[in-house]
Length: 528
Image (cartoon, rainbow, N blue to C red):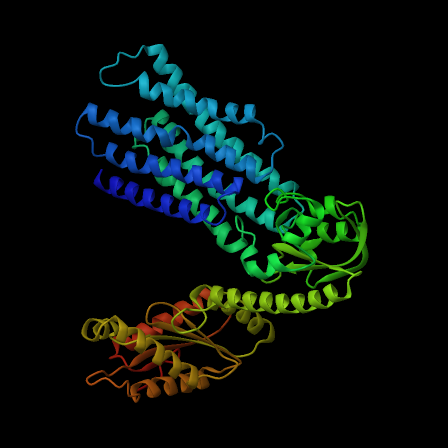
């Protein structure tokens, strides 16, 4: 059971880390708080549950089981509440509804703490009630959560929400089914009895939600794209909304005009403030926006009762290419010429900043931080695209797989800082030896890949040889340090991307086997 204990402790650390890093983005958000409660319950369950696997007697097991019950009794309730908040269920703000959601968790926790234990004579009827009720509570809540998420995505017009719903539903269903099989089906069939590992299976769900956060900006609308001080001090209207038009941030000026508190305006729909058909339609169809949309003479009523014409600009935010994750709505007061000039200048600077940050975000998502080459995921995506083009055009297409020889010895002898320097300099040499239309990526630690479109195997081998020689002859400026590289060159012949990479990889290791510091290609031609 030691391995289960170790896994449980690791899981507890992961739950705590993800929960704390999520809540710090926005402590006032109901969604963030609900997600934090869910990860907190899983962290408690995993931490205390790890000790139950090591318990040497009934008393010790009972103690840690009662501690872990604060997690496994409440997790399903917190998960359902999180789903309700995410899907903006109309009952989620009702106190009685919250109590109703938490009631089964409270009953289960009370029974574990006070009706079970080594020195408590629990009546069989109570045991049956607990195990039956707890089973129904656990699986019904998770099933309801999955169903609500599925329905939310199915009914939504938002492409992002549909993708989010699909990811979460799938990654919630997997641990649900695993628990059902291990805890119910296998014991019922008398096949095998395994320890409860629900806290470990839930990591699958956590990974799915985390993937949604990083890939689709799930819990994080990109308000960080706007410099806060600039945003707050804009003299006209400046509002940041989600794809539904719900306000995430508004500057002081518009809050003052509309008599809103800066915190209370959050969550209000922009169409409730600006009653304009064109803006309403733009917000409704914002996922299809690629460029800013401008409106003239939009009347905005202020707390004084005066209606003032505004020039409104709706800017779609694209931290992920071709995916709108929010709107920046800028309003210019047409009655004040000076404010209009200041606003135009601010918008120009803001657009530049947004474009710069979007470019930074894009590069961070596709580039390796050490070499600035494409990262593993993105080079694979490029490879698929270029292979499809090669299959259609019937043009030559090659791939080079490259690996620095005996790199571990470099790290062991000269240190990891020198190892990083070697990787950077090797990357620069590869970059200089390839062409501008080639795509080069860092495939692993000391492994690189070059995608060579419109290239014959013979010419690809020449490029590989050029790379090999440039590295062999390069002076790294450290006495006793000599670096070489082995390369496998493979040509596309209607294989799937993985098969082509496998062929290049096989040739790479053939080069290693044949003595390193050499190029092997599909024709078994060798250059040393």
